[in-house]
Image (cartoon, rainbow, N blue to C red; front, side, top):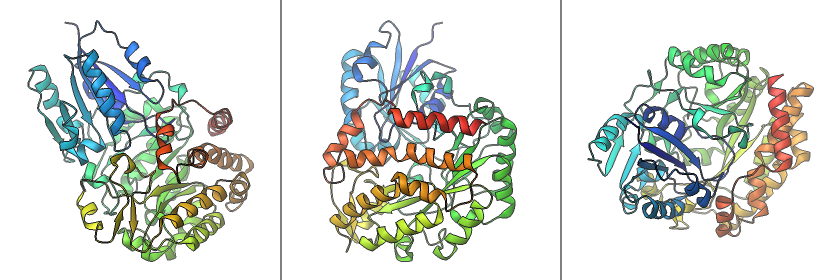
Length: 473
């Protein structure tokens, strides 16, 4: 019997250029029942998308990964798919269907809220029996033991993507913390599960010679899992790895030694602010103690591991001096890169309703709730201060002069220093595009960044390739 086809679609996002784990993970479950094709609309346009689909195939459904950022793209593409393939079902999954299910059901046949794997079998059975439900809810009560490895082989021409952020690997799911702005507890709740050593060993065979990006929301929750994972990575033949975890979880010599031995290069920590009042306002008081920042960062760097940081824009108490002090601290500490995110309380969440008492939501445009736009201001924080401060920080922190200067604030060999600089040349590109397109002052210009087809800028492409060579040798 000829298998039906499932078409999975990555909608436009910004920043672009990194391989996503989501659709290869979805495809891994479906591929036992269907032929799977994955299309990335960051790489190709809509016309090319439709021209590449074999009209003679029986298509069971089109699956779209939808976020606040690309809601308009999802609506438009869904309408076109209905015209070309009226007999195929349409399923939306991802962030937005989880946040605003009723809105999404106005446009699509079915939504998946939360996680995919817990509902996959029932959805497939219903689809085959022509009894597809409107809504499937995947709770985070699903063991990660023996789940299918992601189907990265279905990604068309991986060389089209940048490699500096690495190939995504999930080793655990969920988070035990309760940061008020975070989407994890909406998508995955507070339950926390880890993959078994046997499961990870099977998956890691696909990462030989590659740089790994562990995409767990908090890799550091379970120390024994961390150490086991480090051991497995050491044997995998990977060219190094990076991950995200809380700064306090790094204050452990045994863990740092295991990380160093396995080729860890960068740990991203959500420092978010260097002001205690600001941290308390987003419920980071349990994980972040400013008095420990410098000591732990230096401790981690002494093991040859670089620290990256989050920086929340528009957080409580933010003023001009906040940007100056943060720049000075990040420069002094040799922070390898800073991820800038506007304080965002997503529509459809309880915390968003609560925060109306403590500030102002500056827009009701759903697409602005993506961390790339100013959508919320705490009482006493001014729009002009946040926007001008953000421009100041980007222009200074990501200037080539300050990147090089920052690399001298941590002990590095010549090749490690070059790696530090090349990574910044790649990573800063998204923020330089904010400035180039003037999206801070004119948010509507962001649509240009979102919808333009991704292509590698020549200077970033060279830096990306050099970085990849250094990591290997």
